[in-house]
Image (cartoon, rainbow, N blue to C red; front, side):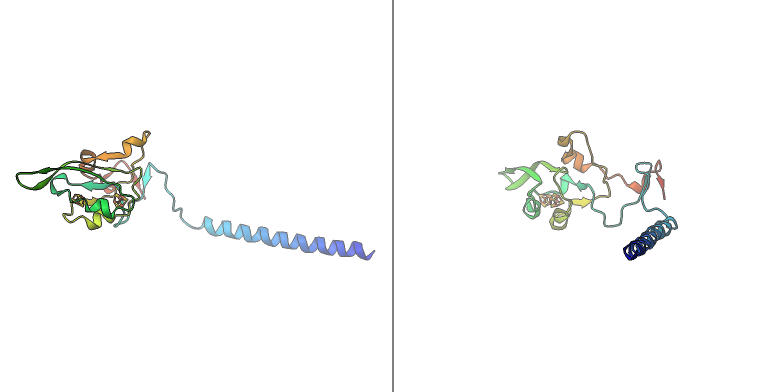
Length: 158
Ligand code: SF4
Ligand code: SF4
């Protein structure tokens, strides 16, 4: 007789605990129902990047002195700087310049240390491509003026 009563008591306790846990779960769900969503329907909606967002790097070919400082400060030795020495004027002549954004970690070291400020971070973040080699930007692609998300009028903003 007594073991049966104990079993019922345990069953009752477990049922109460389960109901309490379910109630707590519903309370969390209801709490979130009252909040506005923080995700957007990309690419139809976009959130403007923050002021110090580190996106695609913009490069100004004419300002570069081919000092290769950025190659030394880059944690993964990424930028490829090709230059030749002009013997008459004893000056480096920049021939080509590239950054592979498939490898770059957007740390911003190169922008920080470039002595001529020819590098800057833009707010461009749509850099995906079907071919990984397309992520390797040469000086022409790097020199393209940045596209500002704030000027993207086709996008519905929040
Ligand atoms: S640090 Fe600046 S100036 Fe020097 S090679 Fe790099 S981009 Fe050119
Ligand atoms: S942002 Fe960082 S990882 Fe990318 S090229 Fe510059 S230094 Fe290298």
